[in-house]
Image 1 (tube, rainbow, N blue to C red):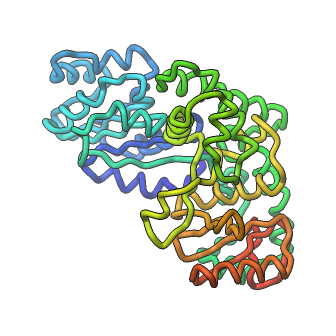
Image 2: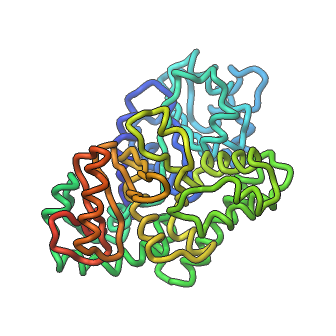
Image 3: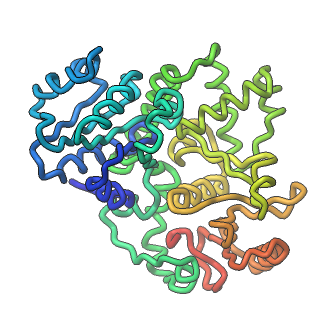
Amino acid sequence: MFYPRQIFPKLEAELETKEITVITGMRRVGKTTALTHLYDLVTSKNKAILDLENPIHRKVFEEENYDAVWNNLKQFGISNEAKAYIFLDEVQNLPELSRVVKYLYDHWDVKFFLTGSSSYYLRNLFPESLAGRKIIFEIFPLNFEEFLVFKQVQKEINISFAQKATNKNRIASERLLPLYNEFLEFGGFPSVVLEQNLERKKTVLSEIFTSYFEKDAKNLADFSDMSKLRDLILLLVPRVASRIEINKLANVLTVSRQTVYNYLAFLEQTYFITLLPKYSASIDRQAAGSKKLFLCDCGIANVLGRLSQGQLLEQSVFQTLRTEHDLSFYNKDGMNEIDFIVDKKTALEVKTSTSKQDITNLQKRVTAIKIPESYVVSHTFSDAKEVIIVTDL
């Protein structure tokens, strides 16, 4: 069965553009599904889809004379006599591919769609010569709205935060709450969401992490001691939704601060973690200071460690907001934190349940930093106009 993702309309619009379309993200987030969907939409018969995990498909592009690649592509029913559509999956398996793609792009009427497992690969192996020739799209595990689509459950969509706070309904929220709790426990990787057996969900999540670490991390990273990277990952799990303290991590791992920074950069560029900056009206000040950690997915977090309900809830809110919004957090002198500043204009504080004091405290904090709009995001239902129920987010 076909399950639409929110990014699909943007990708479909790329069918009519010249630039190379690059789809990137972690393994198992749905990049191949997106590529196949786009391939099926192309009405021209002059198209081919190749999986570069297949050594025979890689050999197509392993020619010293790049013009000879067309002779290899003929074996897949594609020629350069009309506009060609070439779809390449898992491009990180062929580091020299970018030179071939650039040459064919510059000399022939060809539209490329590529998928790759990390921005780390794209940054380090795709040369600057492709600058201006490619558009990159990132795919993440499902947010809660997409989760419901995969569960074939309909939900009323309110676009603005104000509408979400105003148009809530207790019965609707209670109907969706068991599904949200499943989202909290098992996350949004499509294959996990579609799996019915709870134990197999855990097995699939473990396999996703193993695949990430054994394939992407070991193949892409050039670290001398991979066990330190593994140990760092395990140290990060209980720190979800908290600020990262580099000195503490370096001391526990018995490595330098710079090594920790290198590990964190790699984990972020391979989509395993996100480091949220501290909010400031000044761009320079926002870049400074410790950052707040989130993992790629609730399910992965639960497989690797134990999080509190509050941490999981904040992680899930992050997953729902990250694709469409610019996110940061606010903190002053280690106190008075606001969980999320969204697009520099809306403050969100995440709570498992909401009191009047929570609303008052948040309003005081946003007044001090002149953020015009604020809401408490609550797991339990509240009629208060300042509260958004997490199932509505």
